[in-house]
Amino acid sequence: MNIDNKTISVVINTYNAEEHLREVLDAVKGFDEIVVCDMESTDSTTDIARRYGCKIVTFPKAGHKSAEPARTFAIQSASSEWVLVVDADEIISDALREYLYDRIADKDCPQGLFIPRQGMFMSQMMHLSYPDYQLRFFVREGTVWPPYVHTFPVVKGRVEKIPRRRRDLAMLHLANDTVHSILHKTNEYTDNEAIKKAAKNYGLAALLYRPAFRFFKSYILKGAWRDGKAGLIKAALNSFYQFVVVAKMMENKRNSQN
Image (cartoon, rainbow, N blue to C red; front, side, top):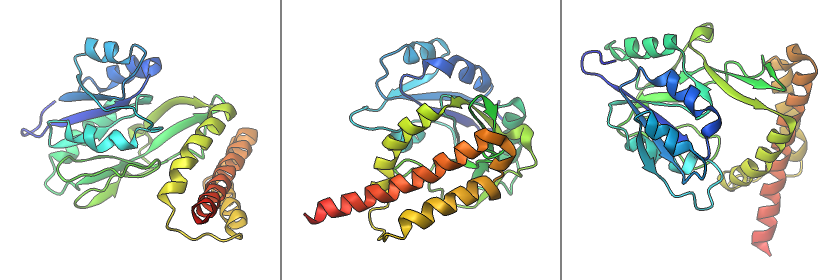
C-alpha cells in the first residue's frame, strides 16, 4: 500500500526463526517492503523469506545473544521512509496496518509510535503482558537502536503511544513462554543487562528492593493477580530477573577490582 508516495518497510530480525515465520510474513504482506535481517540461521529461515519475496540481508551472528546489535543495520537496510519492526514471532493485524498508513498520511504524524503488544505465558493470554508497549514504528532516517537487550530505538522527533483501549491494534506475541524458556532467557539476557547498567552503583539493598518493587509492579500495578497461578509465577520470575541483574552487576564489579 502506498498513500501519497509514503511507504512503509517491515523489518524482521531473525535467527533460526522458521517456527512462526510463515504466519508472520503472511500478516505483513500488505506493506510496501519486507526486509529480513538474518543472523546466519542454520534452519530454513532464509529459504522461507526468499519464497515470500523478502529482501534478505545478513548480520554476523558472532557471539550475540539477542537481535539488538543487528537492529540499526536492519533498519538502515530498508528503503522506505517509515519502518515497522516486527519480531519473527509477532503478528500484525490488518487494522494496525491500515492505522499506520492513515497516521503517516496525517501532517501531524509523530516520528515514532509505541505499539501495544499482547503476550502469552503457560498457554494463556496474560493481563500482565498488555499493553507491553514497544517502540516499533518510526521514521528510518536518524533512528538508532542501542545494541543492548530490552532497549528502545532512539528516534529523532516526537513519539506517541497508540491508546491502550485500541486492543484491535495490538501486536500478538505468538511465543508461548514457559518457566523453562524464561529461565533460559533470564541467564542470557541478564548478562547483557549487567553490562548495559555497569555505570550504576547498586548497593546491597538493591538486591532486596529492586526485585521487591518489580514483583509489586508486575503483580499489583500491572494486574498479574488477575491471571491466577500463572500471574503469580510470572510476577515472581520478573522479580527474580531483577535479582539476577543486580547480582551479576556486583559480581562484574568485584571481578574488575581484582
